[in-house]
Image (cartoon, rainbow, N blue to C red; front, side, top):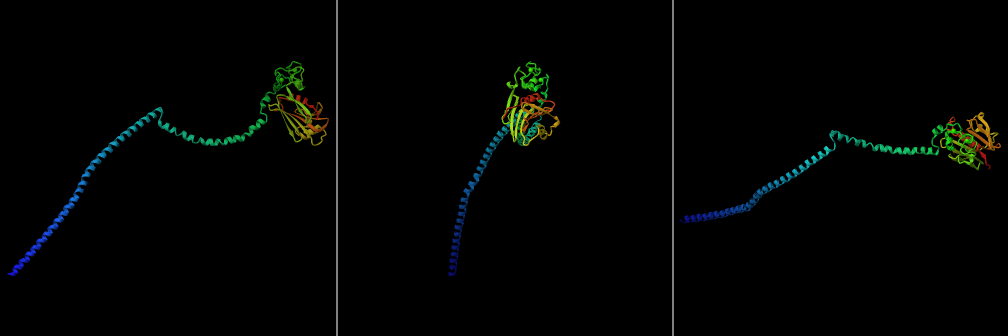
Length: 346
Ligand SMILES: [Ca+2]
Ligand SMILES: [Ca+2]
């Protein structure tokens, strides 16, 4: 009997323990379920936040897309409009500029001048050396004025004596005589005769030295004087042993007076000439004298060699250089100058 009771007690205890265990398990289950529900509760608000904004965002994006689309459309419309307007204006300008000609040729023709213009600087650079060549040539022109300008044509054409009075046209000009009248002052002597012998051909009974037609050159170093046309140019240059006086007609013909100091003794003027002027033959020399001077002249009357009283330490040479020996403009004038040659004394 007691065993049975014990057994029942044990069974009751076991049942109690089982019940307690079950209760604990329930509590644990409850807690677990509570935790789960709590976790579910904490997750659920997040889920709501994410889900709802997504829709909103989508709608907003749609709205933004719409806006962008409209703006782009407006921009395209405005841009396209201006582009079309620009094309229209450009075409109108192009239509105004070239008439009906092919535009392709017009466009091609415009670049062609540009290559032409590009080489043009190169000639300019080439042209710069040309001035230097001109400056190199400048001495040549400066030489021309120093000597008489070439009027040889005038000298030749003016060497004609139309009225046969002994004066050429060039001489009639410098003495103001009538080129078609042989005796301008009507005194019975021809114009050339009067000039050669020292008389004025335009005023009766007047000597040349008293007229305005000639000037007198006086040389105090060598003691002589000579007349020459007033319209001529006079220049002189000193030599190492002498002096050169140049009478320039300004039309390529000149008359020289060479006053020379001889450095050796000569027996005669002819000897001096043959030794110092090899181009002059002794047979062409003729004796000549004027005032106190005596000497020789060449037959063609281009040279006169003079000295005073056989004193051969000084010799005066009168020389005429015409453009051509056949056509001389101032032969009578040269003879006038020779005849006017005078010893003025030292
Ligand atoms: Ca004449
Ligand atoms: Ca006369």
